[in-house]
Length: 41
View 1 (tube, helix red, strand yellow):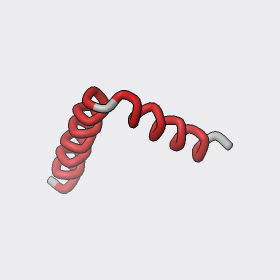
View 2 (cartoon, rainbow, N blue to C red):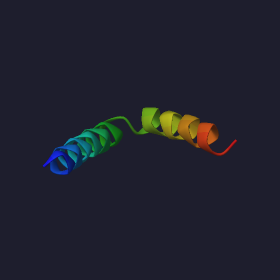
View 3 (tube, one colour):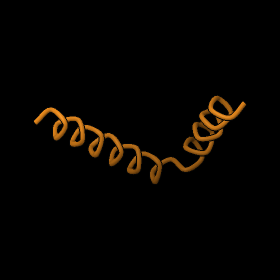
View 4 (cartoon, rainbow, N blue to C red):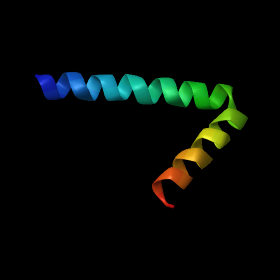
């Protein structure tokens, strides 16, 4: 049951991120670049 709730929250979060990404492409590129540098530095 808890796993389903976590998955649901993740799905909603990803959906929000995708919606935000399509609304603000330039901001998304900046954030993606920041995350990329943080992960692969």
